[in-house]
Amino acid sequence: MAINKYHRLKRCRFLELDPTAVGCFKKSIRTSGRKGRKISEYGLQLREKQRAKFIYCVSEKQFRKYYEKADRMKGITGENMLSLLERRLDNVIYRMGIATTRLQARQLVSHAHFTVNGKKVNIPSYIVKAGEVIAVRENKASNKYFENVKASKAANMPKWLEFNPEKLEGKILALPVREDIDTQIAEHMIVELYSK
Image (tube, rainbow, N blue to C red; front, top):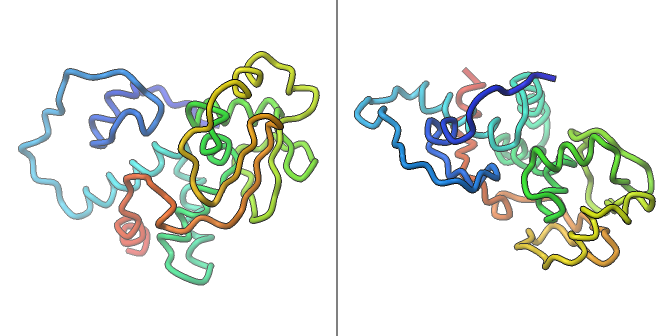
């Protein structure tokens, strides 16, 4: 797996992204010095792709595979791609409020803390399906971190997910549609970039 060695606030400034979208709650007093430069159409499309990759913490190779899979699916390619990205197991854990960032969710999944329909899963890119039940493994539920999750209040959860903090168990009610996805991404620009 590739290692990202960039400063998160700098990257957020460059991509004109709110730092809270990637779990960085610091405030930056600096502004980007690129305000006066005109960006080409290709540059805008490329920035949109980089923004999506940065938000969902995926590599170029993974992102390209999601685009190709979405292109083969029925429906609008951009919306299909965002739906696939939202259905990644690490993103679902983040959306349920178990983790504060997608990177933390990825680490929790990699350390095999969760089961999907009773089977242990340690692959962050696992694509969940409607009706699947995601739960914290029984031997991990007594961990201090998950005790704090039980005590915390439920966050603003998308309507396609359901989570019970007492049982540390969630369910995928339906597949996400574009109205359910609140990320700052113009997916049509990404499709235009890849379809050239």
